[in-house]
Length: 151
Image 1 (spheres, helix red, strand yellow):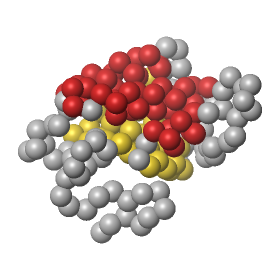
Image 2 (image 1 turned 180 degrees about the vertical axis):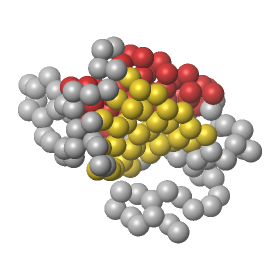
Image 3 (image 1 turned 135 degrees about the vertical axis):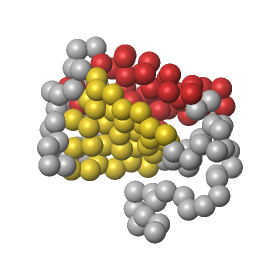
Image 4 (image 1 turned 90 degrees about the vertical axis):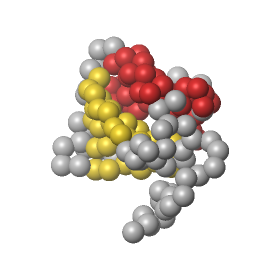
């Protein structure tokens, strides 16, 4: 995995409604390569790229806004955060089997170790956590969606 001396790193970028999904996947893949995830955890990389695609698409389609994407690696979890301008907090829904959409958050739920929505003064941010396969690093682990954070 990434250099053991690396404690935390992050990147941020805005992806416009016009053409942002493909650019978001490329940008994310480039940063995961910097962490050696493309070499050491290719399955997790695929999961992250699909989640990024779904979250950017949701920002564009449902919020009609650009997607502000932040990737943060804290030596335990890669946090993928996508902010949009819509104040409406999404809820996963059961999509009709013939529907062409409506499965984005269900996919994120199935791919990420955990995820949550943060309502903000202007819009909302959805953050999903992905841990690489293998032994977990020493120290406190991030809280799951139904747990209190460790202090």
